[in-house]
Length: 392
Ligand SMILES: Nc1ncnc2c1ncn2[C@@H]1O[C@H](COP(=O)(O)OP(=O)(O)OP(=O)(O)O)[C@@H](O)[C@H]1O
Ligand SMILES: [Mg+2]
Picture 1: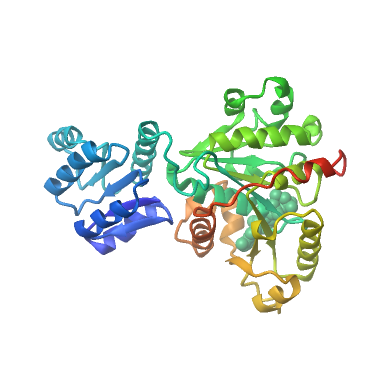
Picture 2 (picture 1 turned 30 degrees about the vertical axis):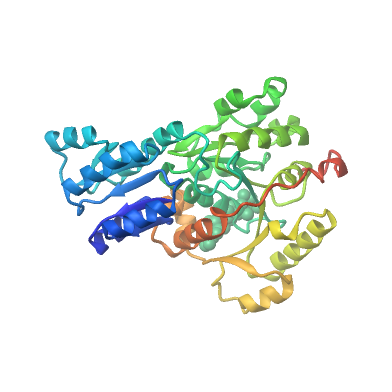
């Protein structure tokens, strides 16, 4: 979460759109002071161009002494050298010109990194237990429901322009699409994890993640359908343990079937996002998935059902669907042709068009349901039940 202080509400809303879905807007100094007191772990406040320069300086100077872990990023209509010097002396971390959202996000991300080093033990927003990240597995037993679309866009939403560290893992080893959807080169990928098995530690694992945007790195699937065969359950379990220490959130995309790797991922996850679309085959598969989760003793409270293409006019209402699956729907993502268009352009819609209804649905779900919980991963109950095989 970022705090944005901008006295002019309309400008504030525009900046908040740049900054991501979970930005808290304040329009008065009194509100800012109150909010900062309520959020002692907060690491970033952005001061909009409408904040008086003198007020911005004294805010930054006060924080530098009282709260060094809180970074101040200042947005100005124009960045003159004397203002820049004065601001930096006062303790402002960065000064960014208005109308340059890329520079703003980069400045926010650098400031958060600095804060992280200054307050290394403080949990970041959404990092439930303070010591390690939360692992979220996106799953649907039926193919084509939108798992990769949701996983990639959620990862972007959770990274919030670099304010959180997110690791996206493509566990669809044979047919993974994350590299294509993000236009990344899978030169380094999950098959290398198997090669490094004996020497796998945080440093070697970090070298296999491909950087995408500030705060978001991806561990991609191999390019060939058989290259990932040496990846096994033990490796996935070790991978997740290491990744939890490296990221605030680990988002796992999966193939459309239960296999041993998926089960290891589910076992090591805090949350299971079960995706469906409003059609009978997908709902039938979701119902079977829920029953299978029960059999495997995966906790009900770790499940969230997401209805993708929720507004498709196919004769099934959300109430009908909830009746069939006997679980409430936690998020509704509308159907829109801009989704395949964004995929074909290789830019997740949340990044490309943050105000789009699909983006808003995903961002709101990320900030309301994912970035604030404190549940813990399963105790490894599945590992002992599972053998090899069953992989596509
Ligand atoms: N909300 C949406 N509106 C419109 N199209 C969508 C939406 N969500 C997904 N799609 C489209 O559905 C197709 C399948 O999406 P995606 O690849 O994310 O599914 P998947 O579950 O990962 O598939 P697989 O099981 O093959 O891995 C894509 O072409 C995507 O553009
Ligand atoms: Mg997929």
